[in-house]
Image 1: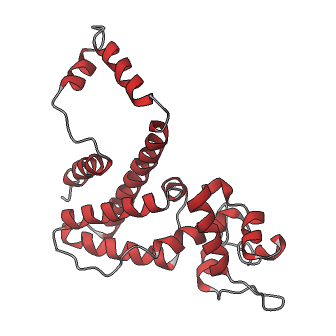
Image 2 (image 1 turned 180 degrees about the vertical axis):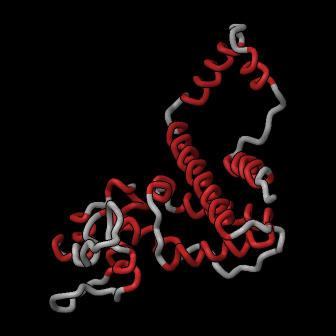
Image 3 (image 1 turned 90 degrees about the vertical axis):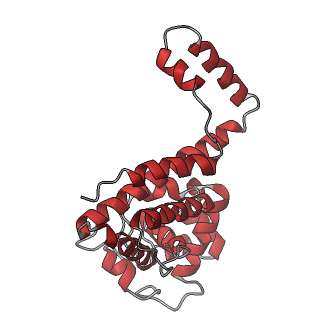
Length: 238
């Protein structure tokens, strides 16, 4: 697989990536496949983070030479596209829709969050690229069908889905970072004491009022649901 006219700034022409067989164009039949390479890369990213995914490391995982890997994925950008589309196969694409597009869109948002929490590297990888693989497009088709009752035209439905995906990715990235920060001993207690001192200094009345307001559930699930509801309920379908 090589770069071709029509390819983006990184990666290969999507026609070559998604519409060609899972084998290199030249040479003897190898003992591994593009699928095996992708699965190995996903396993590395899930367990060690996306920075652990290098062509050399993936080659070692599948027992291949580094140079032979380039027949399947000429660079890490292409490998990331393969990884994203592979894990997107976990997302449902044929479940029943209620006809209530807001309710269905919220369900899709929750599915996306659960999916990104299973694969935390997705939250930062997805916004940085436009993956057009078959599994990704199947889920997009499902989401667009869910939005049909909204009365929005096709272009607007694409925009709404992109807006939802960007929101979920950003929220999950923040959620994962906060969870990691909270593991530091005493961090949460120290932050609470600091904010209490700031709220009492008389220079931050708006913050003081916000901190003193009635508490809301602060579990990750409840917080995400609250933010998602605000986003979807506020969408203009006119």
